[in-house]
Each structure stands twice: as structure tokens, then as C-alpha cells.
Image 1 (cartoon, rainbow, N blue to C red):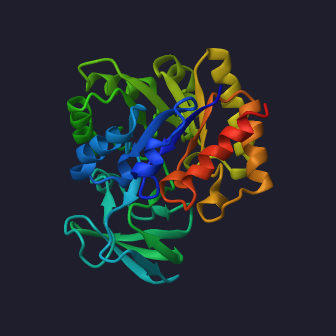
Image 2 (cartoon, rainbow, N blue to C red):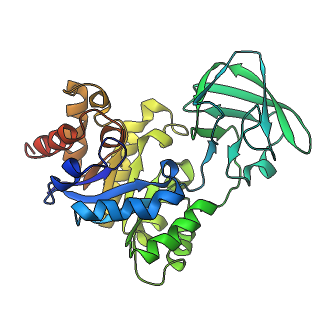
Length: 319
């Protein structure tokens, strides 16, 4: 039977949605730490538990570079213009990045791709307090958008916010954590060390390094999750279907539960009916042997969260 992970957000954080969830199919409720204020985390968990006893999972920020909070909701960057990345003064005109460790790694001539290549900037100068960058591909960026650097960099597996969340998790007896950007088994072992009781860890496979270390990751994690979105930053998009199939087959062989995420019902964020391609994607993914699926934007910010859940269940019943 299919198992579904549901990502909670403004569209689904309400009594009507939570109290009517089908416990037969829904395995976990995800709280994405990248989009949740740490101050609100404990209150959010208590609110969810008022209406359902489905287990809650914290999804870490992990080893991911992101834009910080912008002075305005969005920032428009014009090609060939210049933009400043601030190292110290936050919310000054320019751009701030998270985590802070990234500033030690960046160098002149590095190219930063923001939000799936929507915008690209190149570092052309550096001082003690800032990086000066040239916009080589213009566009609009927002708060908390992912950034990919054009070379290998080293940043911690857990952010400061993640570690704060682990303390809250223990206080509230949260027993499930999804580790974003898992790169090796050691990341998983270190995560377990933060907890004084056993937890179930879902390791997110979203980098080439994770694929290279897939066997050791599967042996240490309780589940793996293929995040096709972030994975497509490092794997050409035309290779994602084959890569997904290979990971699912490897997980089956290893008896490791495997979940698949990203764009499953993306059109239903705004439309009440899915596309035929989306329905085919869900059917084929499950038919290939995936344990379950992860609904993200569909249930977090979409207009039809309940309809999305029901659509996945309906498709799974045809297998």
C-alpha cells in the first residue's frame, strides 16, 4: 500500500485539512525548516497535534546555500548590472546568504546559480565585508531561494537553525527527521547523536555525492527520499527519469523504503485537475517500486491540497 508524506504550509495548516487526513495512506506530516520560523516551531507542532496523531517529521535545512530574508519580498536583477553580497550587515541593500559558513568558501570568479538557474551572478571582487558580483543572467529572486555554486564547496551538514530544531524535537518527542542534502553515512550517524532516543531518519538524495555514496546511506538510514528538484541541479534533467529508476531499483534490492518528491502534481497548485503527464508520472513511479510519494508545494501552498492527496490515492489504487 502506498505511503504519502505531506508537506504542511499555509494551505494545509488548518483544522479542516488536518482532521480529515486519511491515516491509512498518510505516513508522515513534514515541517520544512527552510520555510518555518524557529520561533514558531513548537507552536506549530502543538497545533498539528490538536487535530491529528499522524507522526510529524522535521525536514532539515541541511548543507544548502540559500538567499536570506530580503528587504522586499523580491529583488529584480538586470543582466550586466552589479549586486553586492553582504558578509556582515544584514538587510542592507544587496544580498545576504545562509548559512554564514558559505562566506569562507566563496572566491572571485565563482558563479552562483539562484533558484534553478533563474538568475546567475559572478563574483568579481571581494573585501572584508562584501562580495561584488556581476549579473550574467537576469531575473527575479526571492527570500530563501536555493543557490548552487559552480564548484565543490564544503558546508556543514546541519545549520544553526537545524540544531535548534533538534532541541525542540526532543522536547516534543518528535521521532522522525528528514536529512536534507545527505552526502554520506557519517551525516546520518551525526544526526542520531543529537538525540537521546532512537529516531527514524529519511535521507534525501539530492546530489551526485549522495548517489555515489548511495549504498552506505541506505545501510544507515531508515528511508531514502529522491528529491528530483535539487537533484536536477547536478544531474541533467533528461537523465532524471533514468536516475530515479536506478535509485528505486537499488533501494528495492537493499530493502530500503524509497520515496519520490518534486513536481508530482505541480499543476494542481493552481488548477483543480492534474495533467495527464503528472498522472502518468505518479503511476509509473509507483509501478517501478517506489514505497511512496511526497507532496510538497501541492499541499503546502497550493489551492487544492485535499484534492492532491486524493488524486495520489486514487492513482495508487489502479496498480
